[in-house]
Length: 52
Image (cartoon, rainbow, N blue to C red; front, side, top):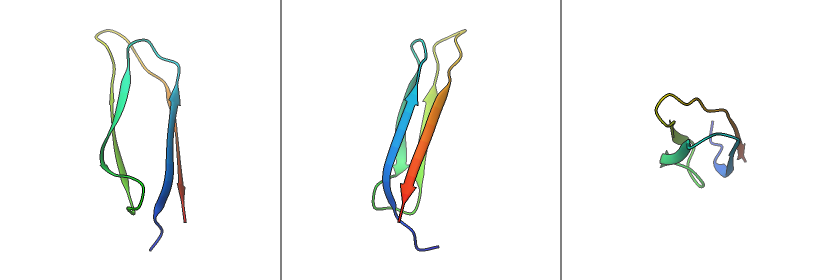
């Protein structure tokens, strides 16, 4: 409670996949991310969120 996001890092090795922030983020108490893969392709991401 009361913690704010200080940094967000998304890393992955994928083929034609992408991630985008749809809400929140640095300075907020939350972050929303949208992950989209190419047709018939999978994806694998590592998401790190730092707060204080």
